[in-house]
Amino acid sequence: MMDLNRRLIIRGLAATAAATMAGSSTRADECRTYDAPPERAADFVGRIGVNVHLAQKGAVYDKYYESSILRAIEDLSIKQIRQGVYTPAPGVTETLYTRMRELARLGCRFSAVCNDPSDQYVTTPPSALPLIYEQCDGAIDIVEGGNEPALLADPTLNPTLSWLHQRGLHETVRRELAGSRIDVASPSYIQGNIALAKPLAGFADLSNLHPYPGMEHPETRGPGRLGGFRAAMVPVCGGVASLITETGYHTALATASAHLPVSEAIRARYMPRLLLFAYLAGMRRTYIYELRSSFGRGPADPESAFGLLTHEGRPTAAYRAVKTLIALFSGPRGPAAAPSPGPASSRPIATIGSHEDVQGQCFRRDDGTILLPLWLGVSGWDRGAQATRVPVSRSLRVECGDRRNALTMHRFDDEGGSRAVSVPLEDGVGRIEVSDRLTVLEFAA
Image (cartoon, rainbow, N blue to C red):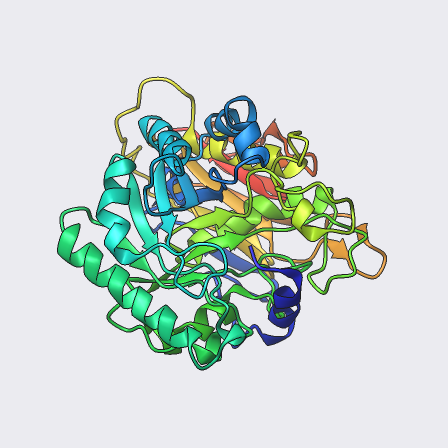
């Protein structure tokens, strides 16, 4: 997690165009169809991750691992975990790797952060990777370069240290872990020093982004736009795919930091949209920062207000929103259902009306259920008044193809829950309201 001064730099220097999502339009009366093969809902769920700090001795992740951290990971059903790794050493790292193996037995996979020699705390040499991989029972999918390397601390040396370390990571993975299918992600350079980074083409399979929107909404075209962060990494990594290893919102409303806050209600409103928007923008993974707030320094400290769990361990509305989203896209628990193609449809699902700012994409669950999340990609936060705006909405007509008799609308709320409402249909046609709170239409198989 970057310190507050480095966040000040980010707010002004996020670069170039935002990632656009297919289907956005400003025409007054448009018919948008969803007849292309839908995305797999399981693929979306499988790209959601969370940041943890299992090795922080005496901190909340250590003291409350069994009673809080482990339970929250199981409760949320998140399987992607981002964790720093270190050279295995007797008496030093047993707790870390014991916990990582325990999570691996639950089906979790890891993005392993390996800091370079410029890090002021600890360095993970590339030569340690084979033993680290063994200690984690092979549950590592991604190896990352340094976390937000401090290039500006020594501009003459640190960019070279970062480059050499990244080259060593990539070469070690390809030479000694060749059968592992591990992707090597770049260091997570921040916007304020990325111009100092040396080109990594050939040494990074993924570009590594930390696109915090600040007080902006997930789909913003402003300074916090996702496309700006992605474009800024192209000169470093080339045209490789991207992943987000840190993102999220904080609720420290009394902060004087330039990384501006939102209310807990808005964080709950934005978080499902943030995860869906990142997926539809092509992000390979999106790791929320963080599972539990690492500090409890009061309402002026952003670093005390990012957690899905509070520093004291209470679930926030954002926690509940993420849980609700994952549960809906995962479907009923129990024996895995065989993938179903669903019934053939001569009429595709369609929405008719003004689609200005409307975001959406069809997904298919493994039980054959079709899900269509829809929302308005607009701001719900009044920065000046530090107040939640009343949700805006737009009416659309929905045509359900041949799925005429079973349409359920799940309306998300600002407390992290959702309410299921049956939509009346006539010959497969009904009306829905779409707002900046997520709505998910469910079409039974």
